[in-house]
Image 1 (spheres, one colour):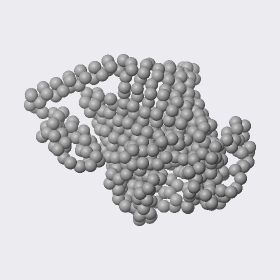
Image 2 (tube, helix red, strand yellow; image 1 turned 180 degrees about the vertical axis):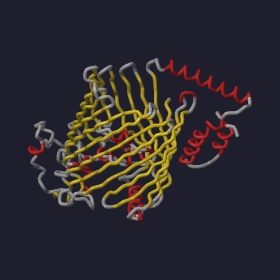
Image 3 (cartoon, helix red, strand yellow; image 1 turned 90 degrees about the vertical axis):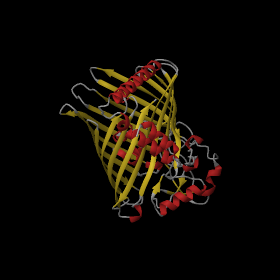
Image 4 (cartoon, rainbow, N blue to C red; image 1 turned 60 degrees about the horizontal axis):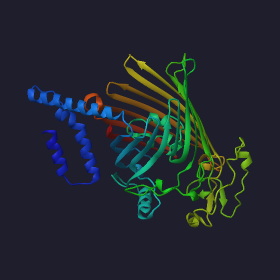
Length: 478
């Protein structure tokens, strides 16, 4: 069967968007076998040569367009994944989840220095605060069941205007502040959403930042960054397809102040003389606490009443004297969001959260053809979630290797948490994966397809579980 026949067959079928996505990915996966397999027939060979020539011509035109301004570029990665949890201490957690995930990055380059960038994310919805969907998610949490393409949401994760020079860049808008590198070692199909690095990632903030590159053969290559931000509480946090709700000032928590008075400082580098292959990263974040948030069931924290005064001993929590804890919030804002919390106990989430990260990486090559990357990263969070005296620590060890078209990954993360009024809690996460990636078209100009298999071993809140995952993906640029 020719490729065009397969395409016509898929178009003629009726079904959901998810099934269409599955069919498209299946077509991409088998297309190299349908049109590019070895054949002794001369006509087939001439057809293959003609296709390659057409691709070269199209790509040459595209390369010429890349030199023009303004121009539009983008990258898309989409995958279908199946996670099966088994051997869980809590039998209700033994469920199967089949879902679609995607990330699309868009960039409008106005000239050589200025650009506007956006990133859209599609993923299964895990939380919501509106109507029947919230009730359905709560029922699912109380009585878990298998999921098949249920409740996906599409949202704008980043949207920035950026000016970039040779050794300096500045940006403003909605972005993810720089903190840590463990997410880069997201192992296999699980990605950074199923890694403990997601627990300390700082995402969806409004503000701006600058970074400087310091490069010299005498001391290597280094980058220094400074960012100021606040939590995004605008309608940009809502989602399409299924609403994911909106962040509210009444939720409280780190950097939820309505003003860009939280700060991130970072340094990373490598190419240091005498330390070939070694890289490092350091980061320090100060997130001013917002107003007090509702006290969730099952959580242990510093309890205060709604009627208590808001005066805290902020001077002790502001050793740098930056005035980050001044009570300058408009407490009358979003009064409609506070109605449900009237007369209830609240969780004190107004303390300054201090985050620190330090990491070391090392790259080497075995047998002159097997690159291996190693990473260890430590994270310390004081006043986690804006709760006074809540401590959270992470230690990650990770490794990634490539051999021909195969990629291998291993990661282990230990998390400990010191909770007021309760004993310390420990959790661990072990990940292992193998993936096969194949380029499409000459030199991968049509993108690449990948098939990954992964295993996750997790212990959290005293409960153990194992998860096996499979993922089929496509990645390409335009």
